[in-house]
Image (cartoon, rainbow, N blue to C red; front, side):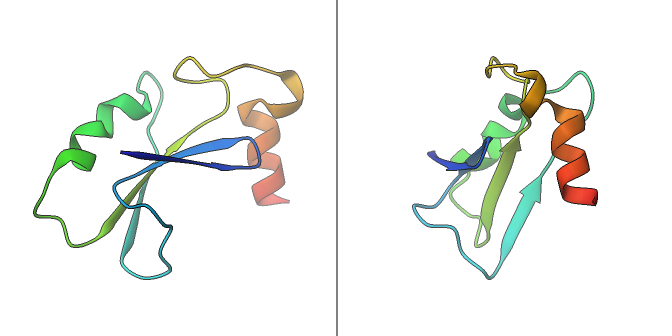
Length: 78
């Protein structure tokens, strides 16, 4: 498992580099966390790059009102 940082987001991947091709992104819902998808990173027979996004304020990450999930969504949407 490899960890990357993009602004305030932590990304987990099964590859050392982020690829432009054949990547599958996983976003978890309410009541879940990135650790629910970590079994995918351990699978050996996957030809695609798996990228799991840890959302701000989830999965024991630091919570800051400027970097909360709502502000993150506004930056993506607006």
